[in-house]
Length: 360
Image 1 (cartoon, one colour):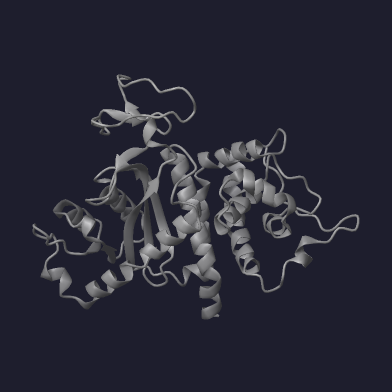
Image 2 (cartoon, one colour):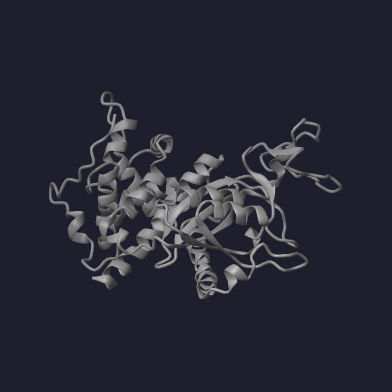
């Protein structure tokens, strides 16, 4: 049963959390945007919660708590519950009164997993972008796409032969293992901790590691995230996800999409053009012929796209350093992707108050 999102005032002499938060605190501008997006998601919440039974954690409060975890780089949900116990700012933003008990961390985790079933993180991102004030500031014509590695919550010791032919693990929780002379690949080995993780590296000379790949589309006017995907790490995952995300962009008008040189393949360029988009791909002429010719590069907009495209790295930088996406704390591509999308929504929320204030 869906819990009620209601914050009581001060009782028995306690101070109202609303009065304790400074009027110029940045969270005061972000909270109305969050509440408006959650109001748009209310019909979805009604569908995934039973009308009878014991009330659960209100989904609005759960999402606000997870957003705060991204805003303030809280490393675990257990520490998040600890902060909610004594931090008045956290209680005010989440919607808890001063005397309200904080949830047990295992209860919080089980309720979070329920939101995974309804793909609420992606719906929340779309609800933020659907705000009329936000929608007016998004570009409908020019976009950029890129992907980044997300380190899996699994060690290299867990990457073992699928046929169980390797040596058995040693005693203890972190026993030694000798990899010398052992050939390992995704065809013959898999992680026992996170079966969805793949051994992968993005460039020559880098170490291969167990990871997932997060993909992002930004619009080029203010570089806000408008689409996300998370996939297993393969050599074609970035291009396949890019085609899927471009196809999900609303409208049938001609658009331009910027890419780095990893996307410079003949088949990918053809697929993007079939979607009604102009691929502004960085040319890769190193020992090969680029799929992009003068018909695209002669336009001034091509150089603009390549210059703006680099700002997508700012998104990845914030999500990894602040949003906790450098190394995920979750196992399985669906859970990793859910948190990746919520972190992208948190990035947009951090950017929006200044953008909306400057345009006012």
